[in-house]
Length: 223
Image 1: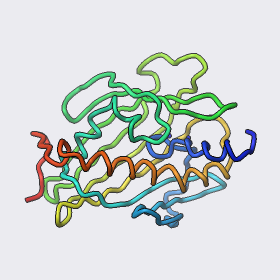
Image 2 (image 1 turned 60 degrees about the vertical axis):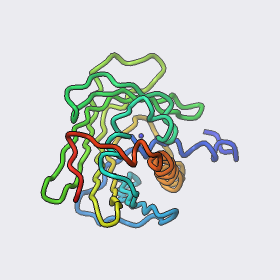
Image 3 (image 1 turned 90 degrees about the horizontal axis):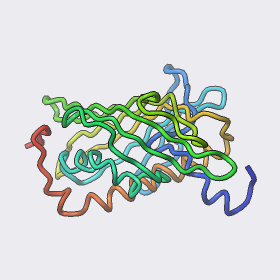
């Protein structure tokens, strides 16, 4: 995902959920990506059309494919590493590579929190061993909750390509509309903070032996 102006508010405005669900996005597909910033080994790109943004980030993480897929599979732990994600739960596991899940995102007062239901499918290209995790909104899968705005349009994609020395090239793409009006300055702030905070937390978790030694039957590692 994702107003009064004050220092306190600014520190909390990057909730704009761009790491998992994001901000309003509708850039023209023909436009080139613009590098917003490169900090902490995370490159953040955007495309803009009439004040509306589309997001892509790129980085590298040293972890087996099975390790990062295991992390994505642990839906209830998303609040640990997903920036401003305050609740997440699995709704249905269709198969080891397909799930429906719910997540709730913290938006600062006076805006209502947002929530989203996502249908996620995982695929692997056995030629280059790249893994793709694609999520699309399924807003009517469960009833809406009072005083929480349901995100009805969203699509995201994680791409994970194994390289040399145990490193993965990781790319995240987001196209979503959280509903309501979100000021451009808040979106710009979120572009700077949200992706780096999420990747930073992911890296720390993925250092743990559990993820470094993970092996999943439906994931083939690069030899």
